[in-house]
Image (cartoon, rainbow, N blue to C red; front, side, top):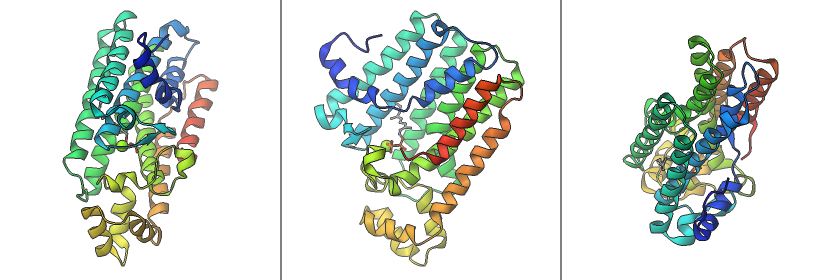
Length: 295
Ligand code: FPP
Ligand code: MG
């Protein structure tokens, strides 16, 4: 399927779409194949729509964060300006819903998609209304749930629906996706500080520069001897490298990893025992990948 007939829109979307991990469509397809092999005609359009919604949200996220690089390539806002980038994001978003409509997915599917997009927006608005403010642990979790966990759990729920699993299995796969999502975002927030830019494809320290305060900072503020210096840096947009040094001198990295591992463990426990062996193994591997990932 071509992303866009218009050569300019194609050129604007293609580099970003080419680079992703495809985690969301992969989860959906795996869950859809939980019981018996599911024909690709039933999964591909919705799998594509999920990746397009995610990509649209990243295009908009990069405008909000004024990010210059994503997935190793220049962002749409940096290349074409925010005005065009908003429309590129809208285009991808519309394309996703075109695929859903053309392929006659049920109203329940449409409802799950609409809710997940609303949650993405609420999470993002919550984040942007409290820039340069230190969130409580609860506020941090609410935000990462809305921004990431609900998206991944929705992919699993949609797949379980296609596989016609029973209520309990659907709920368990949804809980698996939610644990995965929380862990994914915690690791993402760690990588923002300590990841290798060449591998993550985006400059490090971006969260702090744009005023987004995440778990490594919340932890370091709790236990560092230099907490007051760190607080001043993160609430005023000060020197990111100095902040990273203070965080690194605490147990914040181990603390975040331990929390991420706990969410992965809870995801694993929720995997239904009724899954096809190949799918159960694949979903276990996805769980391993989330905590070990470097990008
Ligand atoms: C990336 O996370 C961004 C998100 C998970 C969600 C962004 C959502 C929106 C902009 C609203 C929804 C918009 C549409 C069109 C569906 P991050 O900022 O934590 O990670 P990053 O370091 O990769 O930017
Ligand atoms: Mg961002």
